[in-house]
Amino acid sequence: MSRNALNLLRSATSSLSPHAVARSYYPIHRRAAIHFRNYSSTKQENVNDTSEGPGKAEKKAADTQAPVPPSSELEAKLKTKEDEVLDLTSRLRYLQADFLNLQRNAAREKEQTRDFAITRFAGDLLETVDVLSLALKSIPASVLTSTEANPPDSARSPPPDNKTPFAYLQELHHGVEMTQRLLLQTLFKYQVKPFDPTGDKFDPNKHEALYQAPVPGKEPGTVIDCQKVGYTIKDRVLRAAQVGVNQDQ
Figure 1 (spheres, rainbow, N blue to C red):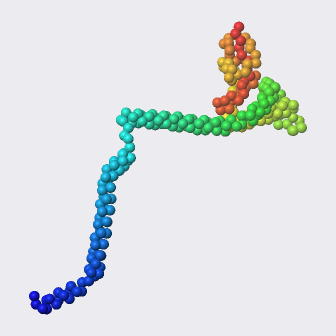
Figure 2: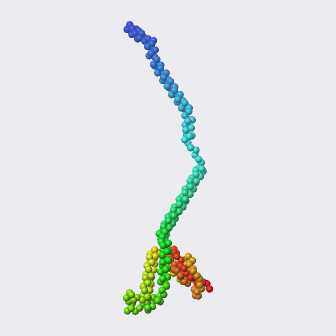
């Protein structure tokens, strides 16, 4: 070995003191130890996860999976639901029918209320019509058609002060007749109509029997006389006719 190489080796070995060697070795050893500890802990966790993993996975799978009922139980539940649907459907149909009936009844009652609103008022007016009818019947038709009540053309228009009693009577009869006719026309506008059941079969729903008398040639139960005419408002009896009925001999 040459002198120069020997000097170089000495200078290199003299610069490496024990403290420097220790300082240069310590970081490498510490880093290796830290790395070893980290590797050991990671490996231990992996081992623990591996050992406990299947049990936890099975437990989670068991928790998430619900018990499946048998097919017979499902069919029974389905049948129950179908029965409930049928029951609710039938109830709904009954309710719809009841509602429609209620609407019809309400409309009919409203119409009847409108049509028969004047029933009481019209019934009170019938007494006035009866009085006028009695006043007209009190004067026989023969009196009104007599020659004295109907004088010749030359004497038909005497001065007002020279009118005969028959002329006044005729004018009064005419005025009462016009009043009765106008009143009946007014009642007719509201569907109030008179009816005379003479000759008809006795109907207790429309007739009021005042007496019974045997009349030859008449069928028993036939109306032979009408004391007061009856009245109807639309298809309802406003007042029954007061009649006499033929009696069986």
